[in-house]
Length: 401
Image (cartoon, rainbow, N blue to C red):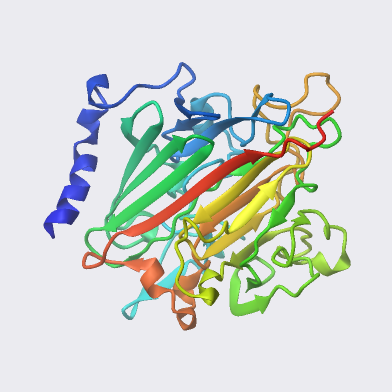
């Protein structure tokens, strides 16, 4: 093992010792089991389960603090609730869907554990993927927290041992994410993401609890990955034709602008009207670029709260999910929602939106796409890296009765 890679692994091997002492950088959890970090204009809570974000607080146009991500009130509920839909977690070792729960590396076929569509595919790493694991808190300061996970060879059927670090840092009005994963023993697929569910109104808009009136803009995403009836890529890359339901590149558009259009039926799988689609981010068409400056890859904003997110990332795709499967059973937190009893304190269909920064989905089964160097990593390779910066702002002219 090369020395730099060994040094990268050592903090994980000794993290159980580190976490026992506040003097080594672990501030410790709140009574509800969450770890808080903060900076100017922003604060957030995280939990070791899934290395998940559970709360993110920002002030809106009226300087009222809103908690704009889905989650539970107590960290212990994540491992108990059967409703937990990857809330704010890091899906892995391979995010999104793997067709037939199989893939080939160097002529060897691997079978990973299925967990979706009557066990016809693997979603977000399988039934015991990284979302469902308790990560180790390696360090925790007032504005940053780092989690680690040691995933053994053969877990869920994936080859090779993988050591992963996820660091969340807050700076004024910004949330920074950095994920690194090192494959120590065998070539293996690695593709991560942040599965954060957003409701930019904190479910407190008296007119609607839904996200359909949010503005969504992806100026570099004129293509999508075509999927079949169970949302598995079929190998085809489709143009997002101007004025079609998937056109968010030509101009900002409300998320729900086409939600009742006959053209959108089946867009997110069989009999599904909405979005659960991988949009390719084509920034290189104009030549070399710095992802921190070129962009943002996606902008999401609410006309009611005035809160806007601009996402800058080094990843080449973005999965947009409009919470089509929410059905009113997932509860909102005590920090969210109305208190007048006018509507249920649950998440309705289209009540949120997920923006997953990642690479092209199921690229490990589409060799013609040329994603191998982005998705297959072995002991001789550099680590997998994902970076993203979420920049928050407020439109002071937004109406907010």
